[in-house]
Image (cartoon, rainbow, N blue to C red; front, side, top):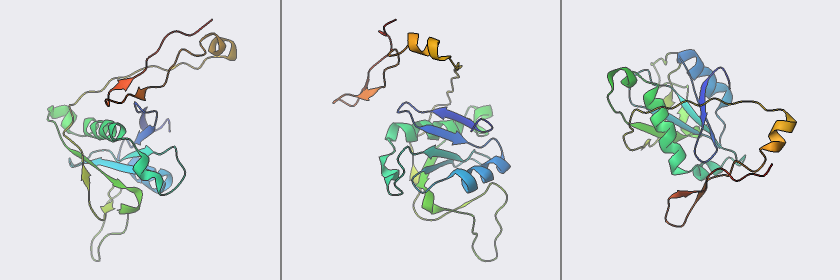
Length: 170
């Protein structure tokens, strides 16, 4: 997915977005699977965003955590024209089977535009915040020295995110 905009959510799911109308088209036609979620913003020119579900069951779309949906919604809003104006915006998500390239009779859909059938699930307005990080590819010896340092985040009973890094041996 290197040619697209992408990130890994707090829960470890890959979220991929198109950079322009052609990439939005390619992303939906080639990479949107039945178990994935499609996220978009109400703003014209917003990126099409696909939350890639790690589960392969087509009925597993409900397994996408709400925090990942909120992060994907914020991402698509930040990639829209709202970023330049600094105006917060709302995003929404739908199941993959609600996204179609088939327009109603007599209408035409431009490249990167899609028909959404059924109910849109609106997300809370997102703050326009983005952060970037750099990733390094380590050789086996370096990776072995840092084994155990990354600890997956887990939800505690109160709903807050727990876990953290540090503490590896070596």
